Image (tube, rainbow, N blue to C red):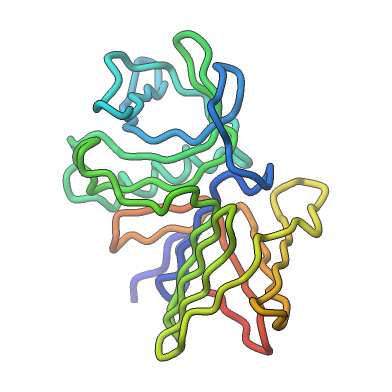
Length: 224
């Protein structure tokens, strides 16, 4: 029997969090302001990582040195898992994270996900406008997406349920776990969402994620 790797996503569960720590959508960012970043990571000298940002017109002209300051170095761990799983070891590795840049460096504050089969900036995964959180799982199949305008819960065999925007209700001392709630529209039961920043890997999809999510609503608990 093959043993599951540490941090493996149970039952094809995966989640990533984009900016929920600040509870709002990031606007235009200065060099020192955390913002959502997408691009490719390659190895540098002495074990360092270099990041080439994907911009509106394609890849940035230069690479910058990447410093991983995510909780528990989740980005570095996720990159390692995807590299072990992917079929094409020579391809640059696609990553998404929240952080800031200054000069020739970029600092990671929150790891979103890494994917081994994205080949270029023109092939980036599509994301809904203003996405703040995405989570999905099976048994039963479900998907949860949050934007500043509200949250949408989709479950197989059921109509989508719309919720008001998430409100932060609690943060643990390590800031690795956060709790949110949102009311169903119109005036229904509260949805509780617990987000924990910890590794979640899907080797079959050549992917790694920086968070796990548990959602509870109307007596139903959705998790991996």
